[in-house]
Length: 247
Ligand SMILES: NC(=O)c1ccc[n+]([C@@H]2O[C@H](COP(=O)([O-])OP(=O)(O)OC[C@H]3O[C@@H](n4cnc5c(N)ncnc54)[C@H](OP(=O)(O)O)[C@@H]3O)[C@@H](O)[C@H]2O)c1
Image (cartoon, rainbow, N blue to C red):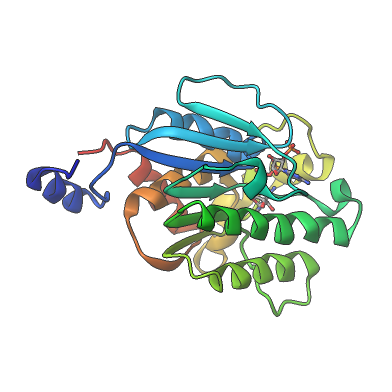
């Protein structure tokens, strides 16, 4: 149903795209730190009638609007998810070199799996793809992690998505199921110095994972078209947009 003119004008004033309701969100990485913060936000969002969450293991979450699709990411998603359609896709996939057993394993997730998911989302009708990348992502970087993230961003741009939102957070803060010892130490130290990172260093401020999750929803609500990158400050702004009531 088309939104009433009044609601469209109110939506324009608030910065929230109008025409909400009855939408389908597609999520990958819903068991991770950002993904597990994102799912409840999407499930409570009035704009989504259904949230399709792809995972390799069942998610510890039940909700009337959640469809958890346990899939094999190394087999064609189109065959496993026949008939699935979506409006927006949210990608929180990622790993570490350590967890993946080295650089090849890391790239297989942070590049290849993301691309597989994006291609599937596009074929399923996604008008928007929202990605959690990383600050400093750069396809020309000499740093393997940043180069991989940059190449993923670059290759996503080639897919011709109508809207591609790339969030580039620095260190994510939050409680993990399995603590990574280096991250824990870094979190403690960097929480203290975060506020001191000003000016050109501001994009490197650590950020709560739930703020990034809220920003992902905010990106979808913004209605912006094309490729948009969001650093620390813009992620915080988008998170505010997510929290505003739909007019
Ligand atoms: N950690 C940081 O400080 C930081 C900073 C900047 C950017 N980032 C980026 O932000 C994104 C989200 O980070 P996060 O910390 O929320 O990630 P996370 O907690 O490690 O979660 C990663 C998600 O990816 C899934 N995944 C990993 N390998 C997979 C595989 N082989 N097949 C299927 N699913 C797989 C995980 O599923 P399972 O639960 O099944 O493993 C999980 O749902 C990542 O791209 C990360 O690189 C992180």
